[in-house]
Every structure is written in structure tokens, then in C-alpha cells.
Image (cartoon, rainbow, N blue to C red; front, top):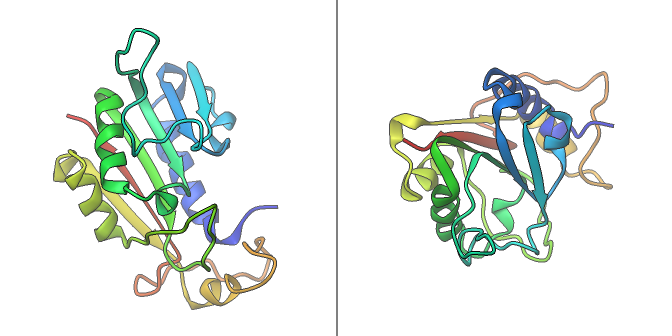
Amino acid sequence: MRSLNRVVMQKESRDWITSLGPETLDVLELSGKWGQSFPFRRYRCVNRWMFDPCKGPMLDEAGKVVRFDLIMANQVWEHLDRPYAATRNIYRMLRSGGWFWVAVPFFAPFHGAPVDCSRWTARGLKNLLIEGGFEADRVQSFQWGNRHVAQRNLEVPWPPDVRDDDDLTNDPDFPVVTWAMAQKA
């Protein structure tokens, strides 16, 4: 099934990633395997516990920073103790013109895995990316949700699956999920 709190974010993000020409991209995904569904030139998925972006950029055997065209982090940043440091390290790992795509919950139950630290609105997520080194005019951030989805987001088991009768309209004053794309100059 598809997660209700991610359905709009994933559709819009899929359209955006497809517009980049995924077959030309070297990609790193941190925790999760959503990126496996794209025909990337090279795709590497690393569990967040095997590579901690808070501690520094990913290095190769020679100690040089490993670079990517796109780095994806889906529902990871809220679990980081030092998201600003992690964002700066991701910036260092991008090639010139490369993209960072990050998605986080806003209105969601506490979900320590093992920790749950932060929530951002679209504006807050954009500010995080600017603080991480991205230029303001190269960051696009979005938020989506409504009271219906928020109420369903309190169901157990969590997260709820999409139902045919779910209201998917957006209420900008009641975000459930936030995502952003930022391009390194």
C-alpha cells in the first residue's frame, strides 16, 4: 500500500526527479530504497547508521569526498541530532549543479528510530538548506497536508495507508509533510 502522509510528496517529487533525466545521474540515497524505482546511471543506497552525515562527508578509500549528482533523504533528517552539520556535509558531497532532495514529516507522531529530533515547515526547511550552504534562489520547498490527513495520521498502526475516500486537497495552514530540492551552484 501507499502511505497517506507521503502520497502527494512522492508524486510531485517523482515528477521532478524524472525531469532531471535520471539516467544521467549518480545518486546516493540515505536510508530507504525509494530511489530504486528510477533508472539512475548509478544508484547507491546507504543505511543512515552505516554513514552518519552529521559526522562528515562520505569519503572514498583515498580519503577524498565522494561526489554525487543527486542525494536523496526521505524521512531521515528528523532523526538526526545535528541536521545543520549534516546538511553542510551533504552540500560538500554534491557535484557543482548537483541536487539534494529531502523530505520530512511535519505533523506526525513521535517515532524514535532511535531518536526523533526535529520538524520543519517549508520555510523552515528552506532556511535549513540555506544555512547548509545552498543559495536561497536555488532552493524550492513545499508542504502538503490537511486536517483529514492529520487526523488519520494519529491512527494505529502508523503511518496510515491511502484509502479511496481520503481527501488529498492541500490546506497550506495544516502541513503533514514537507520536502525541498536544493541545487549546488
